[in-house]
Length: 288
Image 1 (tube, rainbow, N blue to C red):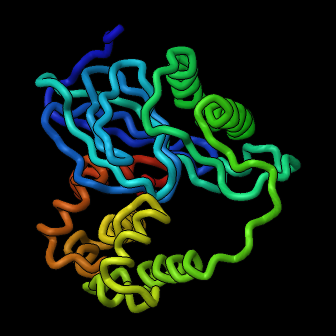
Image 2: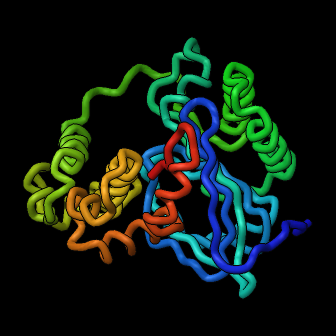
């Protein structure tokens, strides 16, 4: 049932949870997210309206009580699916925390991941909402919070995840290693105006082959990954108190206007608004 109180306009609030997890509670009447990705798992519940997004080549309509489940580096957008907008609550969960929630003796190779970015599971959605409220009410009870979060994440992956089969570790793939070098290169040179030709050269591939191979390997386009890296660094610099105009230049944006568009398109709020909310928080970070 759609019972959420609907604030007018666009609003978002960020709160740190245990384990380096960040909670975002948001409502948007007309904001549209551009294609972007996060370097972490994203687990959320739509609270009202229709949250419409494109991911893995198809459009999804997430309705109240539906789950949204994004894997690290999985690109997606987001906008309203009907005129009155949409709202949601979402956790940004570090990949390491998710791995630590799984049984280390299972002998599984590879990484856990969600089978689909959108699921209807009312029981799990209710558990998410109740746990979120519990964690916000007791922010200093870290041991209990981490235990509850770990149990919830393990259950979520058991119900909606795909995990690799128990097999011998696969042989080293030279092509995969080349693409991983490109990710490292982007992280090292994100301040520059990178080109497809430059990145393809790092991978030893043609321009056309590189773009297809990178997207197939990481489920994110190179330019979307570059922007995610830039915004991650921008958030760290904002937390340190750097002026926003300097942050824009430090992170490779042409000017502050360009930075504002890319930041809001990925995070949902302008850098100045995020700076105010981050200043009120005492831990955690907004994942990108």
